[in-house]
Image (tube, rainbow, N blue to C red; front, side, top):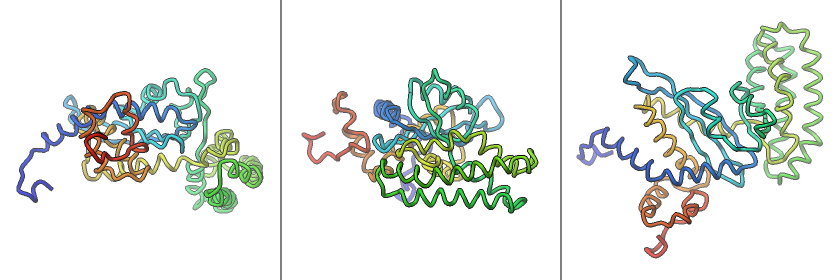
Length: 308
């Protein structure tokens, strides 16, 4: 864009601008993190990113983790970690007590022990993938399971416009019965499929995760799957084709901070560039006790110097 106007600015300089912006916005980022940790339910996922390392002759793999607040805390906070170890989400979620919706990645298991105070919510999207993967090799067995899962999603489609209380009542009336049928079907099917076959893997995953997969029957504010955090990672996945890698772990942290505000703006229907331009101009003189006014879901553009 600068080149079109005949302006020559090095990528290193522009990258430095991104770092400075992220540093200026860090107090707001920490406030957004506090906001997401106040949620009744948090959804999370992770995706890989290449990271340059001067000590290595190749790019290593880092991770980006989105954390989505509930409807009452409509923020999306990204975190960057150099590895996929449990230490990253454990540090981010330290002190959180509530529902955590994620895939069945083993690092989360320790979070659901009684002393941590988190409750696991499973993801039917992940469970369905196992059955769909096995469909080609075992349609007679996988077809009925996928049909019942499709009926569960049909109930969720009906429930979209309902309140949390109405949604819960509908699930308990219809979804609970469908899940009962599916559970019985899987128990009967388990001895008939080879444990290491795609069908066996699908049945084993669903039965092992059954308690978490049926958690959405307990509360109308819970979701049937972890689709929202997965969608929050789509832009990262698309971006990898454009920016290819992070230049360092510091670059990953900068990207996580800036991406948090872009995603949160989009979630709230706020135009991101307008938000950045307004907030970066107001931050130096803005009262630290009123920082929450600048979060995307609370933000109102300044219309006069007095309001800034």
